[in-house]
Amino acid sequence: MTKTIVPASEGRSVRVAKGQSITVRTPEGGQAADFFAYNAENVGEWLSPPHTWVTTFSLKPRPGDVFISRFRRPMLKMTHDTADGVHDMLLAACDHFRYEFFGHKGPHASCSDNLQIAMRREGYEVSVIPQPINFFTNIPVDERGGLSGPKNSVPPGAEVTMEALIDLICVVSSCPFDMKAQGWEINANDAVTELEIEVH
Ligand SMILES: [Zn+2]
Image 1 (cartoon, rainbow, N blue to C red):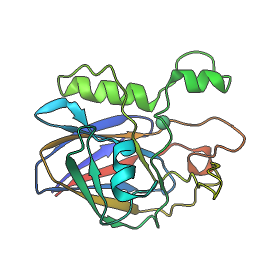
Image 2: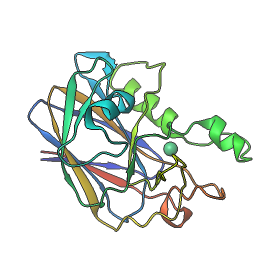
Image 3: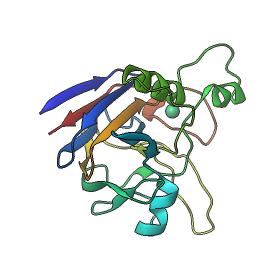
Image 4: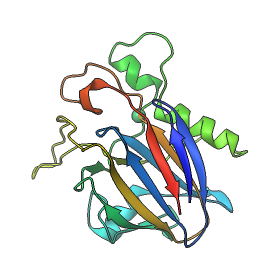
C-alpha cells in the first residue's frame, strides 16, 4: 500500500494498475476532492461523468457503479463509500474565472490548475479540463433539477474506494474553494484541508 498526502489546495497524481484499488479520504471531513482519471496508455481517454450518468442512471456515484471514459469504456468500479453518498458529478472544476466571479483579485489556486500541474509532473500537458467527480461535495439535486450547495457535513475520516479496471493515472485535487459565496458552501467551515490517497 502506498499513501500520498494531497496538501490543502494542491493536487497530486498516482498511478493505479489494473486490479489495484484507490482510496480517497478526507481526514478532517467535508473537504471537496476533485477526482480525475486517465487511461495510463492514452491520456486522450479520460473518465467522463456525463457518459457515466447514462450507464448508471444516476447523477451521484454509488458503490457498485462503473465509471466509464469518454470512449465509453469501463475505467473504475466504486466499491466502498463511507460519506453516505455525499458526492457530486455535475460541477465543473473550479478555475481562476470562478474566483474572479466571486470578486477575488489576483492569483488563486484552483482544481483546474492543480490538475494541469499534476499532469505535467507525469509528463503530459493537458489542455482540456475533464468534468471531475467531486467526492465529499454536497450538491443536492431537487425534483425539479435545482441545485444547491448547503453545509458540508461529511464526517472526518470519510472515504471512497474504487477498483481500477485498466491501468490509470488518477489525479486528486483538494479544492481550494474558500470564498464567502451565498449558497455555495463547498468545503466545511470555509476551510481547505488536506486529503489522503491510498493505492492498494
Ligand atoms: Zn475546486
